[in-house]
Amino acid sequence: MTTAVTTNADVLLASDDLSEMILQSEVYHSYRNAKRAVQEDEGCRELLQAFMKKKEAYEEVQRFGKYHPDFHRVTAEIRELKRQVDTEPLIAAFKQAETELETLLNEISGLFANAVSPEIKVPSGNPFFDTGCSGGCGTGGSCGCG
Image (cartoon, rainbow, N blue to C red; front, side):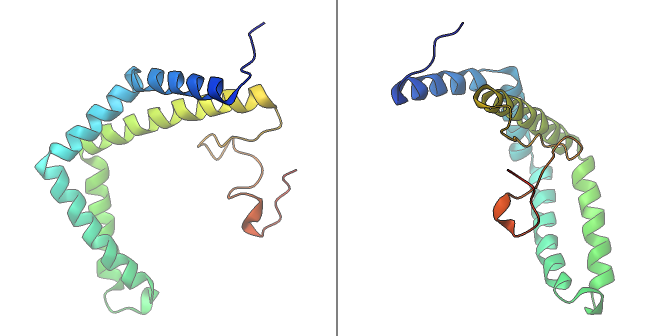
């Protein structure tokens, strides 16, 4: 049987050790390298800036919906830019690395939660496996948590 962590200092030291292991992992290094590649690529930066600018226009149009005179044009343009962003190889690699890191962190969270109690719900990031309420019990909906 493993020894229990007995003090707050022990918990903090153990969490520092775990953080360091994550930061040394291949998953984290892949994420960091993919993020850096996107940030350093002029084409990616320009594409993302154009997308953010168009997103602001899209949000403005969405306030009025289909009644806005530019609704169809802006909606089509944002979809096209989103497709360009999603198919850009460096951005796609970054999103994949980000998903892998998120999966690792979710798995670690699940291990912690289950070590405390199997009743603790931890989001998996996959709506097919998440049960219960999304957004917490304070959202005003019929939660069912408890």
